[in-house]
Amino acid sequence: METNPTSSTPPIRIVATRRRRRTVSARLRAGVLELLVPDWMSQAERERWAVEMRGRIERRMRRSKPSDQRLADRARTLNERHFGGRLRWTSIGFDDMSHRWGSCTFTTGAIRIARKAATLPEWVLDYLLVHELAHLEQSDHGAAFHELENRYPLTERARGYLMAMDRLEAPAEAPF
Ligand SMILES: [Zn+2]
Picture 1 (cartoon, rainbow, N blue to C red):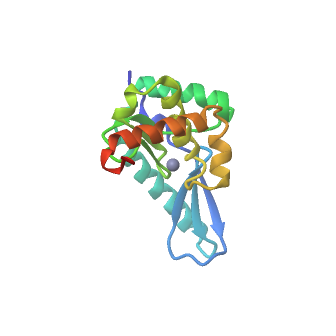
Picture 2: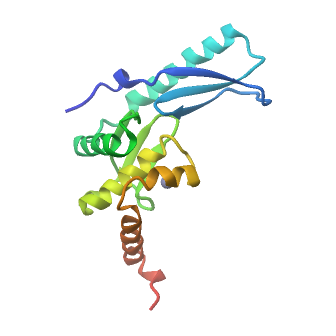
């Protein structure tokens, strides 16, 4: 089953900032695409940018891979359970990654989970999803991010599990 990706294009909010900026930047926050523009920019120019950025995102979303239904269903459940259902993403699926367990592209809301994670226990896979979901609101790993991530009660255990897995996969770094 595929969802129509363009149906979930995030709404756009234009935020004028007094900080000196030459360019327009965008971030996805709580499902809304915030367009940061310098406050000297005219209204017409801001609107032109909003149309331009929406176009870019829609093109990028059309190119992105369809969501994996199993991950999409789990993510929806976790979003309801731990985030009050407020998070919005555009696509979610497994992908080939060798050095990472997952990724979240902040500006497009695309979540990818390493294909090797498909065989992890359900509660560890749930943790990976919660981690990437939390990145929809916080792009870094700061205190606010950990507050979001720790809403999942098995976060500590899952992190330990994954660290142990990473050590098994990298025998050169084993302590013996
Ligand atoms: Zn992360």
